[in-house]
Amino acid sequence: MRLSKSLIPTLKETPAEAQIVSHRLMLRAGMVRQMASGIYAWLPLGQRVLANIARIVREEQDAAGAEEVLMPTIQSADLWRESGRYDAYGKEMLRITDRHERELLYGPTNEEMITAIMRDAVKSYRELPQIPYHIQWKFRDELRPRFGVLRGREFLMKDAYSFDLDRAGAVVSYKKMMLAYMRTFQRLGITAIPMRADTGQIGGDLSHEFHVLAPTGESGVFYDAAFEAGDALAATDIEQFYAQMTGIYAATDEKHDLAAWNNVPPERRREGRGIEVGQIFYFGTKYSQAMDFAVTGPDGRRIHPEMGSYGIGVSRLAGAIIEARHDEAGIIWPDAVAPFRAVILNLRQGDAATDPLCEQLYAALGREALYDDREERAGVKFAEADLLGHPWQIIIGPRGAAQGQVELKRRATGERFELPVAEALVRVRG
Ligand code: ATP
Ligand code: MG
Image (cartoon, rainbow, N blue to C red; front, top):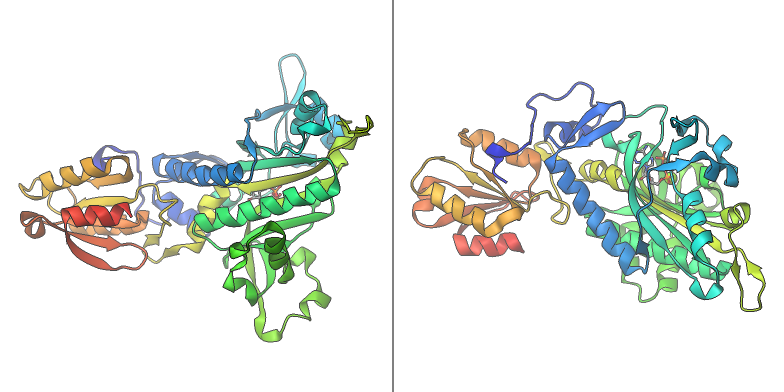
């Protein structure tokens, strides 16, 4: 994109309503705008980030054997009456009445809907296990929407649901999802620790929340510093991975166990705050029983599948990544999430040497580059490039340009390199 023509409404002043850094930076960088309390429009930079996060989440779900579907945002109240959650869910559920006085709701989650779909489609034990998932907007009428997209009312979630014949199978699905989650967060450039957690509204008896450590996190977290080594992903099989993951103490304040904690050597005890970016649940036959979803087993008897559900906050992650990766000057995007890999900074717009060189780079990088072609002072361009957090800045001034040289700056480290154009392109493309 040419910056002069794109919808990136940056702000010079810090918006007064934003209490935490990610919210401030998302507004200042022109990524999002609030349309109503807890409801955001995603502008081009924000939309690219959201799409990149969703792509990585999708790739790791697919790699774990899950299969993508797309369920609607609007659900019927009757579906929720089947599970008994229509009344139980309370005021967080946005309830809607259509012109025929039929009761609908904007889905806060999809256990009921996916169970109904599977009940209709799956009849035999031979068709299991299955893990359908989708990436879809949810609505929860949060009492206190705040911190920008971290606690919105409308938010984008990846939710997966596993259906297995027995508990052993369901626990394998649970472990596979935990591995997929850890790979996802690693690719997103953040460290998220799985913490033993309460099951809340969803129910069940096994659950982990994944927390990104940040001082602004809403949950208190307690963990063994052994997690900082982070080598469980190198485990060779799923059982070994899970044993390693769950063998190290980590719990949210709700589930904190003083007796497990006392076993952690004092010098390894870490207490902090975390942002929940995902949660996984194993809850057995809670929904398959209540909604009478059964398959025919090998001996002809009906079996209620064992279920789990697995959520990732895709839109919350955009904010959480910024909480974890920023400095005084602005955002520091991980390469995989960045809206643009590089920004091209033309330090003298209209110059006979800089203009053609910038055009050449812009043509070569295509969709991956933002070209700052505005008639602005160099200082303004530098500050805005730092604010927006592009992994690479390609700086083109008249002196270098006359010799075919550019300056490359790596946002994360501040390193600078003087290079011929072709070499700079190789670096940026990684
Ligand atoms: P929280 O405890 O933060 O309210 P939750 O436990 O109710 O979240 P889940 O039902 O576990 O949320 O939903 C799965 C994921 O969806 C969460 O881990 C989080 O990343 C995301 N999420 C939940 N509520 C919101 C929200 N209001 N705004 C943005 N993301 C959210
Ligand atoms: Mg949760």
